[in-house]
Image (cartoon, rainbow, N blue to C red):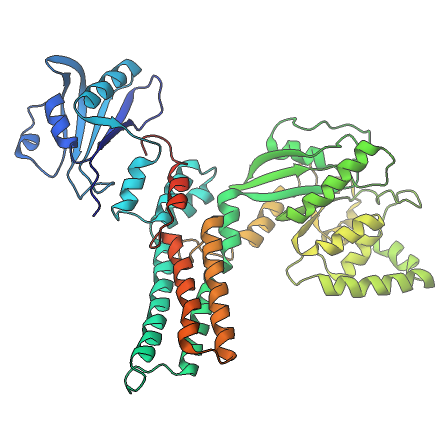
Length: 509
């Protein structure tokens, strides 16, 4: 265990007036300092119990500062692995200032942001995944992200990564045995056996990465873009999800020209919402710029909420809006020219639509009659991550409702119809297929990239093996894979990474 010469102290609760404040002190002088400042009649304190909570007076020499509760936890049985003293004092900042100044005069110094957690990491009390889980738990915006952080703090990711490390170490040990004792008959590594071992570790790493997108989404939120024609209800939906009038809503098309970014919770799911300019042909340079930004935002979105006016067909460039029914679609399909176009589009749609989508090929033909050419191209391109909301469904005639239900989610912002179905669909896509307490989620870019890099090196090792590269050279890629995976938990440490992680913590944590 690494020793630290300095004893650190900090306020662990938010500054300001409160009922109580907690001051934390850690280091090899912590017990000596508190003995000089704390007066108590507790027999447990005087007996020197390893962990004890006692009531007494905090004093500066002979002067009483405050009546406090002091917790003493001797090394190594504390969060940091050092002797830790926690002082519960009354909540005035004058009291806090006096306690901190007294302890600093006795030999402590003020802690840096995240220094307590950094000492816990360096003393082996937690790894980097667990350290990041602490800050994620503190910063969690909903129950799902808090649950994910708790699962990581509990060690599920650490155990999985450690298992990957051990498998890679076993492969390296076998390779080295083959190099050092080429004539021995025991534990010789045959090429096929090595290939199988590498394939198994590759599958395990790929499985670990499989839920990484979900983990990142739970932690950071779902990037959600609202798309559709002008006046289809995008801004109204944004306002409804936020519970406030954030976006201007009028009957004038093209009101929203720049992107509006807001965050909202829908049934515990954190949505990072982007309200965009309505898609239409325009000669207004400002509106054109807004539409261009919409197209860029589509690329980065996790999910596209595509709003269609269920009460009327979308205004087309070549004709007025119209009510669309299956009967009208069949009538128009009798025209030869339209049949030819539909056939070609149907093939394209079949290639892009997955089984997971709500939109089927036959449904897309119906949607085609409700949107412009540009909108239809977007639907095809981003079909896998698109959810169609049939807005203004409350205005649809009763005998036509089933037609629209097969296309997308029946929806009405005004009447609050469809919000539960939208939540269910989002959960189905991003949450329900995973169990965060059984399946490890890599929840940030650092962790994901480390495992992804390790997987790349394993692929390189397999390629080299297939090309007949000597086994001792194959071991270089295996070693690099081990180093990358070890970065996740901190078994291999890069100082700049460690500093950047703990700099995100508040003082006192």
